[in-house]
Image (cartoon, rainbow, N blue to C red; front, side, top):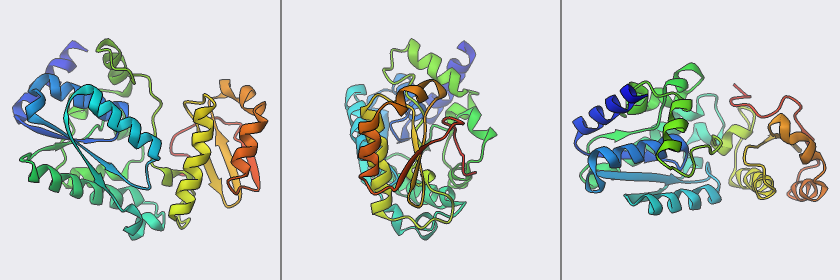
Length: 260
C-alpha cells in the first residue's frame, strides 16, 4: 500500500494542477483527498455534474462533502435526457453520457485554468463492463488511481486510515441502470425510482437497488437485510403508492450490472 500511495502522490505532483470529476462516491472523494494532499487547495478543482441520473439527496451529500473537505468546486447542470442514447437507455448509454459529462467538466476546468481532468477509475473497473471508461479514455481523462494500481478495497482501507467518513459508503450507480436496456427513460421514471430508493435509505438500507420492470419494483438488498425488509409493510406500501402495481424482493440479493 505504501508503494501505491507513493506512486499516486508522485504522478499527481507531476501534473502540477488537477481538476477532479467528482461524484460524491468513495473513489472520486478519495482521489480528491489525495490530490489536496499532493497539490494543495489552490491547485485542485472539483467539478460535480448534477442531473436526472443522480438522486437529489446524493447531490446534497456530495456538496456537503466538498464543503467539509475544503476544496474549490463547481456544480454543473447536466441535461442527460437530451442525450438520445441516454433517454433510449441504449446498452452503450454510459459511453455517450460520459462523453457529454466529461466534455462539460473539461470546459469548466479550462475556464478555471485547469488543463488536466482526472476521474476515480480504479483497477477493479477494468474487470467489468464500463463503456463510460472508454469514453473517458478517448477524451484524455487522467485516471491516477488506476495507474497507481488501487483496487476498491485499497481505496476503502486507505480512506479509513485517513479518517474519511464515507470510506465504507456503498457504491452508487446512475439511476438509468435500474431499467432494462432499451426502456425509454423520462424524468418521471427516474424520479420515481429515486424516490423508491430514498424510502429504503430512510429505513436504514444503505445498500439497495430498486429495479423497474414496467409496473413491478424489484428490490435488491444484501441477503442479511432481507428478513428485516419483508417486515417493513409501511415502507413497501409507500413504494407501491409511487405507482407500482407490485413490489418484489430479489432473492439473489444486491449485485452490480445486473442488466449487463
